[in-house]
Image 1 (cartoon, rainbow, N blue to C red):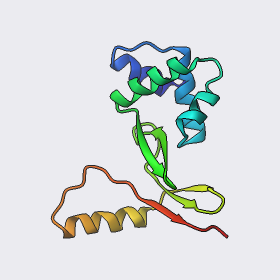
Image 2: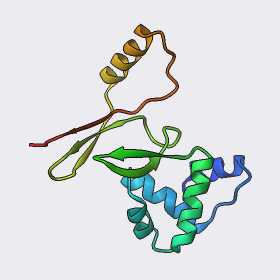
Image 3: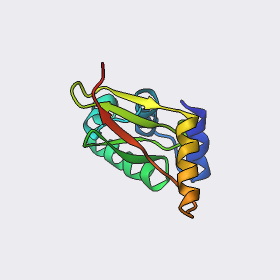
Length: 130
């Protein structure tokens, strides 16, 4: 079991369960997934338990929703995964994670130039891969 998950759940007076561990592991290994893919990946847990776990993780700020190529997916927040964005091919649906400091610097400069203070952001790019 992931020590970071155990510690975070204990901080929030929550116990570690098989389903919670499975949901976390699927998200940590696969990145952004649909709810259907998450349920399919949690073979030791029933559908209702996965939905309850997703609801809990969302309330605890452990996961968030992203839209990739028009499809709603779930992924771990930056607290548990490095900050990144996505590029998705509109033909084959392959998604690549972008972790580029230049993009972050450009976004920070744009935010500052407009007099804002950023609390969070997402960038989703759609295109066609080679």
